[in-house]
Amino acid sequence: MGVTTFSDDFATPILARRLFKALILDAHNLFPKITPLGIKSIDTIQGDGGPGSISQINFVQDGETKYVKHIIDVLDKENMVYAYTLIEGGEVSIEKIESISYEMKFESVANGGCIGKKTSTYHMKEGFEIKEEEFKEHNEKAFGIFKGIEAFLLENPNAYV
Image 1 (tube, rainbow, N blue to C red):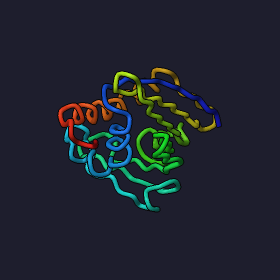
Image 2: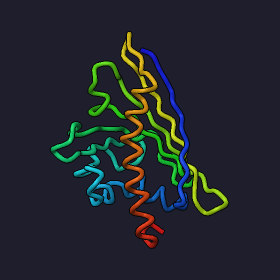
Image 3: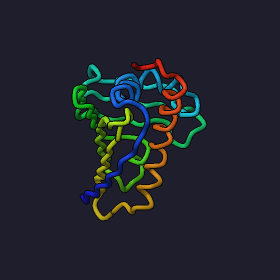
């Protein structure tokens, strides 16, 4: 099994704590309410929502991906770090990917916004590798969800304060 890691950073005018609350802690409530994201529901199917818990994100029926399951590896509210592993659905259902691990960290910056740091680690099945173009395609989908949350928070300055 081969392992390939990609890292990227993004800046946002949203405060780090506020973004962490919306994007991580209350995703199960917020994501389905923002229609353009295409998320029907987020359900905890095992555990209490902390490390070791398994969640399933269900997408609207007309989408290419019907659902994804992930296990929460780290949920550090104090340091605003969240890590999880995609174990089923989406890109993992493609025959060459075993799992994808993600780690996100939100750091406050002087201007009041934050920098998000994301690391994606692809665990490939024997004989396969992921190319940067494929990663960029996967990353664009995730970034679309982030941009939807960012737009909601900009339009609703009192939400998640």
